[in-house]
Length: 260
Image (cartoon, rainbow, N blue to C red; front, top):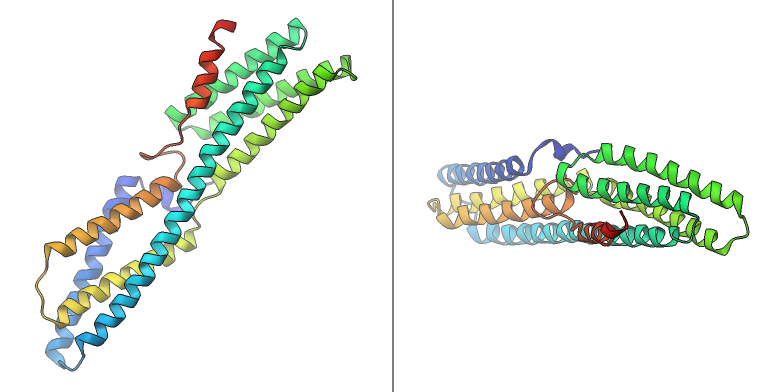
């Protein structure tokens, strides 16, 4: 399964790393500003303040844009999960129109399919889930081919095949949205570069004014790191605190309990 370069870092390491980088950028800017003040004292703080304000505005724009992108894709993953669960439920119901033998086989495979979906939300093993899903899809389609050849003009068989085809298509769409549609690495790089330059300018301005290190600066660094942590959390479908709710699949499994 494809992963992004930043995925090698667990979220806690991502947060700590961002915190340290931002602190280092401010500290470096602070020392450079003090050095410039001692050497020349000619640079105007007002001019630097204007530049800092403009750069912070650009950083705010980049944060808002990246957060919006991650949140939109999170919502798309959530909608895809509900759509897929609905398609599975429809296929299960329409399987009841089939004869006893294919009906039992199809419904058993669909139960196994839903169990796999719920299991991956606990284990995070997406590769195993995809391999199992591909096998289930092959077996379900084999059943569809059998019943289709047995009665090619049946409306009920056609309805079943239609819902099964939609279910298979929706899984492909969900994989694309959930696993492959991520915040591009180039966007992360630009965001971090803008952030580090902004933090450096804040420290530089403080150095020119010969200000001491303020607790407010640390609070700003923590807030910035938390926002980036939230963006990374939204962007990672397989880990984190913000996860797509699988209650639609759980409800399906509960509703099928009496059919076992």
